[in-house]
Image (cartoon, rainbow, N blue to C red):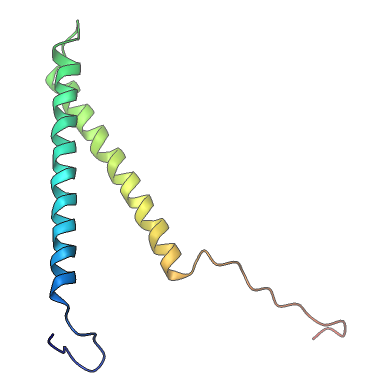
Length: 101
């Protein structure tokens, strides 16, 4: 193990490799889900539909999905940030004594 300085923990290569492997697996899983979603949308709009989706409709649907995902991801990021920054803690109320102090 290599020491990275007085304030940093020693570098643990096994843990780092395990973290990278988990991250790689998550990215692959997300990519596969995205591909499956695109294929499902294609099937839903072309094969089983009496009215095919036009180019403008397809663009509108893609923009709608992207905006919806952006709003959802942004709100989740704000929830995570506010929780980590301590904004979700209950307020501390200072009460005055009977003599007005």
